[in-house]
Length: 455
Ligand code: SAJ
Image (cartoon, rainbow, N blue to C red; front, side, top):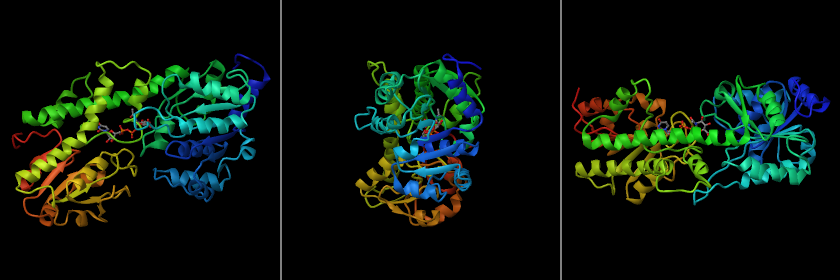
């Protein structure tokens, strides 16, 4: 296989990749960086995980992953033991041996919902100091459209004095892994590889082909937009489900049945309503996609964000309404909140819809107790160590996270432990409404119309 700039040099790097004889430095040992580092080490590369947090680096040096992800702890300890994976705080001397740098640092939005690329800039400066000829640089952090061409390439070229795609290689390889399935999806989900030029695409594709089952070659600009389109599509689809839920309630129909029936149509795949969209990606990436796009009123993406950001307020309204209907005020009521993680079966609470709900309940004077067996976050509320402890003498149980353990709640036992006239607010529709009503709960569920006929 020959490339533009054919000749030994490029072939040499290719051969080194095929023989696993390159040293890969991965900048950022978070939810994306650490699986990346560990998986490349596990296929035989010498990998250096670089992080700014000494706590993370010290733990990794002992072969310990501080990230709770299925299979990651074993993968990290195995590869640290095998001396294929090591961890350091940034040091140019140590990293001079690196042939490839993969940047997977966070790219959040700021309070004005504008991209904050400061972590990326810092990482680029560090890579720029060690950049040498024939080196491959990969950006895996999610970036706004145009960032590779207008920011990353010029930055690295000016720091190194080298030309991208001829003297060093540069590609955008966005991650597609969801917390809870990171390792599996890293290997099995098709991986987009967008080079800043054809050489970069080929060499980056060769590298990711050593771990990912399928690699799709494209260019950096297209890969940037495709990544944002994926997450924005999901956010818009969820917003549609949430709007359907808000429409269904006053109509007295059950949105879950509506979606089940609509999804029997071969061309329909409506997602699931809920208490809001959390996590480090979906609440942010649509704003990246809209960044620099002249915003008019006809903005579906923005409207979808507003609908999803509204859902926690709807949950709060249901709680206040249900307490009021049972003759109680939210002030002084005991509310048990089940789940602080942003979604089921993960330990991650970033941008979780539980936060605004818990904070507002506390502000309204409710006595809030949270219980989450997977996530240590409590957003300042009292934390229960068991479900029983959380619901004891509670007036209202509010379900915010769809953890599997919450899907088989023993409603009889819960009712017996709660105060009289028990209320369930089901933000994830994981309790069967009629079963709860038959047992004597006042049941409010997202998208569940109160007049839905009993089965
Ligand atoms: N959610 C709903 N209804 C649904 C699906 C999800 O309310 O039908 C909520 C979840 O509860 C959660 C939020 O949306 O609060 C996001 O959860 P998620 O599972 O949709 O996504 P993430 O953030 O865990 O991971 C996403 C994934 N993107 C897509 O599925 C298109 C993942 O593949 C990406 O790699 C990740 O974003 C990322 O890092 O970009």
